[in-house]
Length: 327
Image 1 (tube, helix red, strand yellow):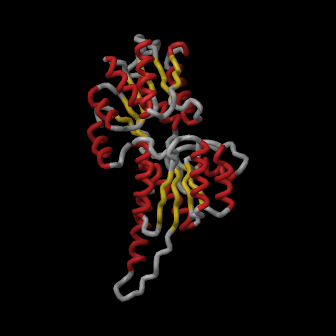
Image 2: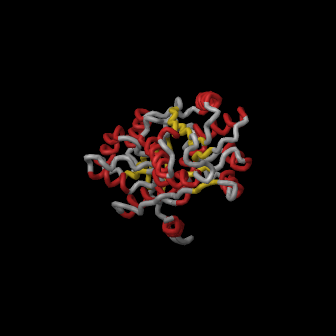
Image 3: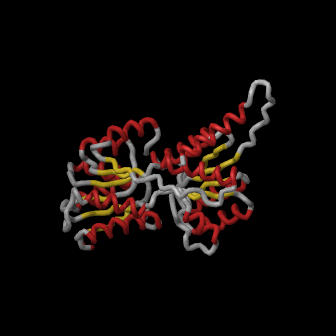
């Protein structure tokens, strides 16, 4: 997909430049808006924004605008989607997390705006066939499959019957519930009983209260044999809480920041899964561009892939992280 997009870009650059003697016609820009789910959400959302803008910079006749709410909530995200639709762009990218967004998305489609979903696949049961189609052709990670792979690898560090705690930052989110259930399924299939698994709901996405909650939990449960999280909003505080109380309990988590990279290096964190967010919106912008430019109804279905970060590859991943391409 990337090769195709680069080739298209080279063609567009060449046609836009022309020869010295030719009068070059102005390039008609394709206006693409990308709506994130939170403005200040750590490295993951920084990478979501960076990937979108990198794709926009690559394609000579695409202009990419990125917006996101300051505070995560479905109403705030929907308000941002409404802002994008009101600008009447050629295409809008939506992290379709809930049917709460359906009215705004349908409005965009009715106005002739192309829509591309990324990061989530919610909406496959929509009554609108266009939303069902978009949900089936999103650019995003298969969260359940990624969770299963992560859980299976984590069983190298824990054994059936060990006491595991699963910290969930967003228990009301269908995305986080899907991830949680996938972990539980793998562990129970591998021999754990449900009594061995404690689901602990955290206050939200703010790492500070999560740190206090996790530290208190670990102090009160010294018999815990393994920690499972799936976000830096919970995983990074868990690593910090472990360090504070001197715990060596194995920890698996998702996403990257400097604490995670250092934790994988020193053994505080056994595994982290990166969703490769840079690639999610990079490919999603290219998909939206192809819809507008060439009339594609469905572009290629792209899963940016699951990269498990461990001691074997953490130095290589750190180089990509520092360069702004991994998060």
